[in-house]
Image (cartoon, rainbow, N blue to C red):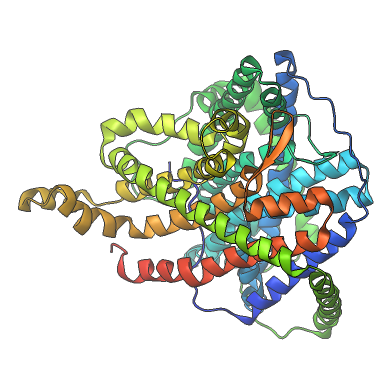
Length: 569
């Protein structure tokens, strides 16, 4: 199953919109940090039990947060993606916004979001909202790109038919756009859901100094069990997490995948279509059949009638008309607010003394070294493993299900367990954090290598056998060139995963106390704990600019090179 595939479009250079987006992020960071200064000094978190009987309730809470974030992501996807697809004037702004937002290490914003929300609303509600917002930001961008690309690639015949039948926007959405994008949106939903587990675990176990922002859930359970050294509770927690992931796969994602086959635009049926015994059972159930025919279909008919009255008829078209003053006036006001916010943020940055800038730069270099070390380790491990699974169907039958389940377990859930073991080794957290960042990045590389290997045409492999190209020569002349686009995509996502992991890997709770190592992630966490908001703004900004800069000037060039020279046609 190809997962964690980047949807980044191949664009060149830096546009004015990119600078505006970065300016907006800068101002938002400043506004959040100003609010964070008013957060409570001490926050008493909820009591977390390590009794296994609490696990069903904790699992339900965790899944509920994931579902809420996914629902918000769907609303954002349909709204934002449709605006980007239907307006040529808004598109040059909306797409760079998505591009930069998906490049930003989201965990660096977690302290700012939580602290600022606790300043303006009850702590418990603020922490719940922060978790949902963080998961939302890990799910929405990928799905929005998918929806946008689907809308812009609908065949002209289908669009023309919708225009002839004078469908209103609601009917176009329900009858044309949603069925056409269903399969792609479903795959990306599964990717986003799996990515959301990572951030859910991080947000559920977040503590800073005397501020306990933990949420009752599987993440907090694992962290509490780890702090107590209770290996039996840890085993129960990890087992419950795996069980939840498998149950969701069996009862939600596999039935949806099998059901979505009806939307494929193919002349020939697939020889091995996805199947689901849950879906087959539901189709044979008279009760579910009655519910579908009477309740669901009845609601849809009423919704169609209501929308026909509310929305005018019209065809799908891309608008490029001139913007009216009704648009420019609020944009101008927003620009003034951003300019004022940027000025105030600059004043806050001036308060950061030279020794703290030195600390940030040293931390940046240390984290950068760990990020690239973890990426090199991930490449060394995943290249032979991914080629074996992607090229050999017999290995894939055994290895792929195992890899899927293991990859679905968020590395943040295992951090406390791994830390307990690695902290005993020479180097302590400095070495352990590399391994933790490796755990946060390796699956991105592995799934891309597997997808790339399985896409190599069998004819080329047979031809290599015929002319006697084997071993390292075949790796150099066939496998690596064929894998290059997938390695670049995996590298972009893996480095993003490693930067995110650094926030929780370089400053960790072990044995009831915090330990830290030199790194930018540790600087962010310690600045949050100390309430040093100028340092928090400066360090977060440096991390954002570093990641965005690498994406634009290093990965983007490799991405364009892959698109131009290493695409099989």
